[in-house]
Image (cartoon, rainbow, N blue to C red):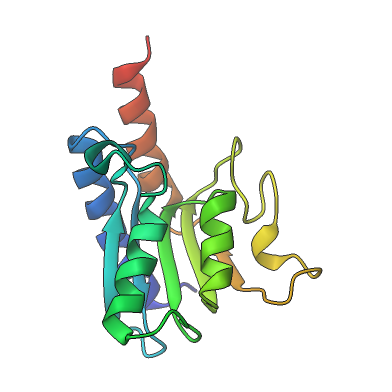
Amino acid sequence: MIPAADLAAMRRALELAEIAGNAGDVPVGAVVMDASGVVIAEGQNLREVDHDPTAHAEVVALRRAAAAVGSWHLAGCTLVVTLEPCLMCAGALLQARVSRLVFGAWDDKAGAAGSMYDVVRDRRLPYRAEVVAGVLAPEASALLQTFFAERRP
């Protein structure tokens, strides 16, 4: 059973992903919740908009969450994202000490939370996060498939 707060956050992340896609960015959205399930920050891919290779939805949301709480230390928080994080984003959430990761679609090409790599749960690292995968995956995958189908013949 998926917690109601996780589902609500993923639905919001999907809305953010759609906004990113409409702006020409890969449609990925992210939400950060505090330990009580309250949303403290949101983000969507802004790489094309900001001309910033690090402006992935997760990094944008984590930066905003850190600003909202006044600390880089986000222990107890949950990062909810529509696509499995890449290596950079997996590293960022570990550096922020995020406790939980909830994601929708798997990323077989660049995912770092269980598909290509499993950085988020790697026992060799000093910090790990709980991972909940596949939440509203069909919806998240459909956004990505539609986006790329319109751009690639």
